[in-house]
Image (cartoon, rainbow, N blue to C red):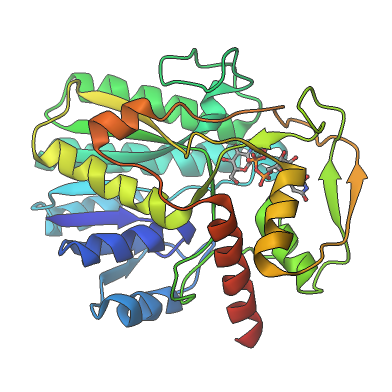
Length: 338
Ligand code: UD1
């Protein structure tokens, strides 16, 4: 298949391009390089032996996006990653988030409709569930009011896709990611956080590497066994593979509805302290951390019901928490060398 990957030089995008090319699919990347580097394309070529087509422009540019679709009207599918994702920044600059995340989606949907491109995979998030009433959280759980403009762009995007697909020829799959971590086994691609990381795992690896002095564990008074918040961490390569399963489901006409949503997690919840212990065990590094106040906007606990993705997508996460930690550390060490 000929697949457009928007945001294909980003963290999850680049890992997905690798898996697509490994499966023999032809890839075109569009990325504006707002949070990634063009050298990622060289790394993808090193891993797979094949260089994806790469176009640098902003998908909020309606004219450029329309011209791209005119030239590439024979696409078999689109995986749409390109979006801003920093929760805190979205609170400070909501319009930046709404404009970027929604306008790019609208321009892509215009192209899909006009050229009858059959399949869309959209990067959604478990953030749409808010603080779930039942755990593990299933796809049937209610969508809760978003706690940030970032989260709201994911909810609104899901609705825009549903409304558009209802009256168009394309199918869509919404993948609701839990917490992606780790890097490709080659350590040639991985997450490149710019500045001080917001997310737990890059903060852990940078602290162990001596770039940050100390990790703050945000809250130890949650209603969880050790008091720290629980998440479902998933290896980025496992996550990438779910996108291929989703595309192939649509291509083989196995979708049961025009728009389907799947959780993409492992089904296992780990607390912040358990993550720290897994890191220390799998790397032999000692981590300097302290307990700090809760971070505003954090949910207490969330982990995924995976039955639907396992049965319908025929996909299952394979890597365990210690493998994920070892992978994140290997990537941190490779970054240091560069
Ligand atoms: C966050 C977003 C989520 C988004 C994802 C991707 C929120 C509420 N959720 O996920 O919507 O899709 O990022 O960017 O912001 N922690 C520490 N110390 C740190 C960093 C994190 O204790 O220095 C804790 C957090 O409080 C949380 C856990 O580690 O309990 C995971 O945090 P993080 O990696 O930032 O991910 P989420 O907040 O789950």
